[in-house]
Length: 278
Image 1 (cartoon, rainbow, N blue to C red):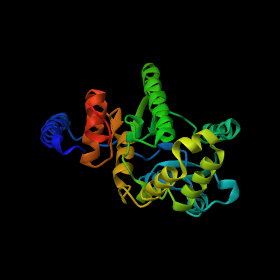
Image 2: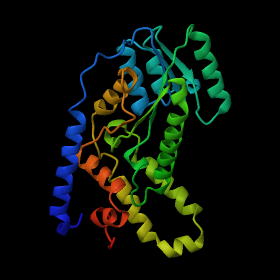
Image 3: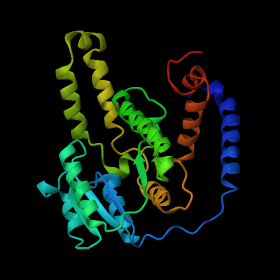
Image 4: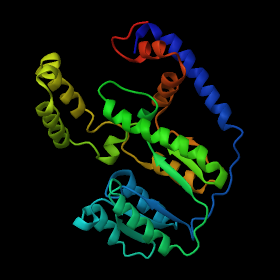
């Protein structure tokens, strides 16, 4: 960040934090809706947020339908959930990219739930679903897409009383283990070998290698405790009046998210992006 913008940012941050505090003050503590008798379908339960959430919500009394990509392959995450041997933990094979597997999982859920009630949809995106970062284009595109879909779905579902809620975490790579050095090497090799001669000449091997090293530096970065995310998802499911968006993140990233999404683009880039000029 530019040193000359320190005072401006400090004043802006103070104003944003004050606004956030004022928004929080009117909220009154309400009793959470009971989990007993409620069911939740979770995708991506092999590892990371999905796996931790399945165990967390089960412990709170939910019946959990845990969709796992690798259940049929006896994946470690699916095996651990099955080994709980609980009638309220139902592990399903589900590749969300397969219409057939999704349909089979949904059919199983419908047959199991005797009296389905109005529900909620909780989607996890990222802070990079509303602001971008250099060298993250593919990731940002996917998260922006999920956010846009969720916003549209929220508006479409009002008439049926179904809430659609977004969870926008900051960096939890260290907590989820979703990024590994070996995985980065595999992706880097695929990207370089698949690049055209023109792209290789324009960027150069040195530039590419430097960015691969930068990505590897993120392997152990971010928060190591998932509880911020798990708590927000739980509130999104059990609060009588949930927010439309939850931002489990450090204050720095919350302020940066507000700056990048509310200030004029030129000013926001100038504050945070090296090389940007007004």
